[in-house]
Amino acid sequence: MNIGQGYHLTYCTNIHPGETWDEVFKSLQTYVLPIKAHLSPDKPFGIGLRLSDQASKDILTQDYLVQFKTWLEQNGLYIFTMNGFPFGGFHGQVVKDDVHQPDWTTTARLEYTQRLSQILAKLLPAGLDGGISTSPLSYKPWLQNDPAKTEQVFAQGTKHMAMLVESLYLLQHETGKTIHIDIEPEPDGLLENAAEFLNFYNSRLIPTTVDYLGTRLGLSPEQATQIVKTHMQLCYDVCHFALAYEEPQVVFDQLAEAGIKIGKIQISAALKAKLTPDASQREAIKNAFQPFVESTYLHQVLVKNSNGSIQQYPDLPPALEHIQDAAATEWRTHFHVPIFVDQFNQLQSTQDEIIKTLKLLPGNPVTKHLEVETYTWGVLPPELKQELGASIERELSWVLSQLPAVAPV
Image (cartoon, rainbow, N blue to C red; front, top):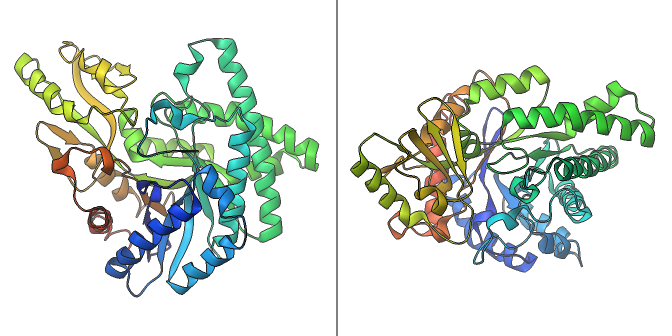
């Protein structure tokens, strides 16, 4: 929804199961219309659209895209951001590390992202830029710390992103719509944090794309660099950066210094726990984490030690075996939990990182695209579940309550 001063707030529809366009459209009709009626009855309501690879192909057949655009206009809805990270099935099956498949070494990932950009260009209202979040190139554990394999993945993935930048540049000239791809670092991704993202962007993405655009389109290095910075940005997922124990102000400053934009902020919270030396307290925390052990998604754990170092585990079960490690002082795990609650029995959430991030926006509007992304409703413990529509409304209302200094509502 347009919440004033150019800010747009929505939720990501990867919450809803559905891999075909028919399934996606039914979920939008079921959930989005009542949410708009309650939260934005007199103003347009933005949608953070998630289309699987299959749904992105479906919507381009027959006249579905035209029909969808008409439906949006008739109901006071608009699309300004999309989630292009999960390629295939995302609910009701084991996802785990498959969320990174296919990675950016494949033409399938490139073509899927290009297709999403073409769809968004058709749907995006005039005067708005559009963003599509994407995966952090690949998944580190697949590479087994093999330098040659890692270099190959970086080289091929960067080449495909250079090809993507060219297509986005040409799309902008053809349609007048500016679409940016927002790379989303996350734990165990090939790009996990701000340092890795910035190193990739400056040492690989810019040089490779400058050479590619110079050869293909005859653009100068200065022109090509500006095109990269227009069309390749960062998705700042608050949960993911909290897991890396990174301060939002520091990341924002680093990006600004490099001249790299944030395409959108994904508003999400992780689980955390402060650890004392007491063994019984640690055992109680271990028991509190047990209901969050589930088989659908990866829940990486990042442990902060007393000397400031970070120990990382690929999922909750292997981490729980080390709950009594004396050096550990805090645990954070990649489990997206409802953003409106900060306490879960013996556990807390990183809600404070969301508040900290939102408070920075009035003086530093790094992006105007805000998207709530809690996709785990289907696997949350029963006591945290409510009816899905009501839960989405409650999350959006909580964000609005934190934003009066940004955009009075």
